[in-house]
Amino acid sequence: MLGIVVPLKIRHLEVFDALVEAGSVSRAADRLNLTQPAVSIALSKLEADLGFRLFHRERGYFAPTGEAMLLHSEVTQGLRAISRVSKRIDEIRLGTTGGVSIATNGTLAINFLPRLVAEFQSNNPGVSVEIRVHSSRQIAAWVSAGQIDIGLIDLPVPVAGLNAELFKLECVCVMHKDDVLAQEKTLTPQSLRDRSVVGITGDHIVDRQLDQLLSDTDTVIQRNVYSYFFATARNIVAMGKDVAIIDPTNGKARLNDDVVWRKFSPRIDHEMAVITAKNQPIGKAAATICERICDGLNAHGDAFPQKGS
Image (cartoon, rainbow, N blue to C red):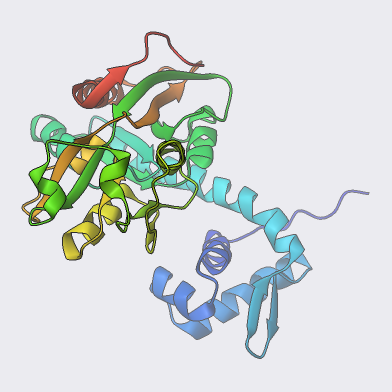
């Protein structure tokens, strides 16, 4: 026998999503601009409507139940779909020309996309542009499902059924302008001997390439700091005596932060893909931005001769 369909309130689902993402009632309340009692009440009402508990709540312990984790991905997708519907309604009401959604894993979110988007919007003020930052796998899933227009991810492309323009970006070594290495035109693995080199998550393809070169040349370095983003690695370099191997969009950016870059040999590449949904043509505005992204990446590296899919 089929269960009774429970009419769920969007606000209750938003509270549930925020609680899973934030990990506590206080942080979820801040995120939603609600009071903590309001969050607790909404959660209790949602659990009553559903007929099962969503969180373990004991002194000093607050965590989602297994049922909550099974439900969360569906709630997240549903809220995004509702957000897209609301956004489209606003665009129709206001008579704007639409919007473009871009998702990146972080490499291009800080020093590449903002400038490109600003230049685009100076000529297209009626087009809204959204930039999200998430993992490459999640971005590929969003693009495949039509939830994002353009995705910028690391290779390999983890989802089939996508159009993918592939790029190979030559990484550079960055250091403070007063670092002794700044006196060199080209750096090698041996140049880094005994230096503190900022790691990229500890298992990034760039780190793996560097580790292989270090092994081949019997060179030992120190890794005392790890960063998820190349831009953060550059900021660490600007503040201390570390050096880093990072992608050129962040490494060569002119930021007036006393960081300089030098060519590194043998070459270390950061391989990326610009992805769109294969069977869902993107709009004119999205196509224009996508073309500009590809042009910008071509200026920093090489496009692969083939298309990925």
